[in-house]
Length: 363
Image (cartoon, rainbow, N blue to C red):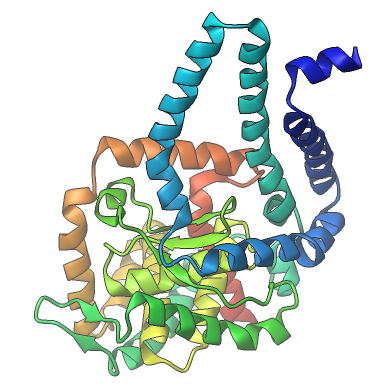
């Protein structure tokens, strides 16, 4: 039996299948024990994320994007090889199939080893000792009023173009350094964050990617924080902070949003603060409008004219991307993935509102 397995299954595939089995047990343990998930995410998963980030950080482009472009070539070569083996000995065909399956299982194994635990630990609200509950329209109004005051103040130190859009004072490689420095004060304050210096990877495919409404993505299998640079600058700065939060062990989307908010608004650079407050304003504004349109109208009446210009420019920019098939497919796939990890799905991006309200009420 042992010899038969060796005959039909490559030795490397056997090792990868064993690793897959171990990682499945690991994921079961994450779901069963939030305490274990937090321990693993901080002390073990963090090591994997650091190693993977450093292994790809020296590459000046996104390795994940490069692999995406290579995927069709790999598929064609594999299909040709498979067809050749079908015509030859059965043993080679079977070995080829098992080899492919082992590669596919390895993707899940990498996910389990470096990122999966973050979905199953204690919530960020618990870690920050914030009350996790539904909020009232009045609380939303109080919170957005504070954010608008800070946003207006930050806007005074930001440069705007004739069409109303703001300008980030750095290129995307400089943004990496600025954000990594902005993260540093949080490492002492929040021990659940993995300390790391890493680069943002701008995506060549950004203009097409915008049709999916995805502003950034953390690719756990390469350890990279990838950024859609087609969005306006303030969106890019906040999205970069969000993807870096994933890289530092914050898996849930609403929690990555809130960490990005803390990083940006706690920074010395006015443009980061502007980006953080404007992004949070957008979430709070949508929530308040649904809860109480009258209070919403009252709150936004205090917005600075330059901020209004920014929002108008963003609306014009986004019009061509607003309704399309790609965004619907992307949202369905993303929603399914997020729900499979025990979150509320795509709606979890907006749950940052509850964290923000609790944070300001606590303060």
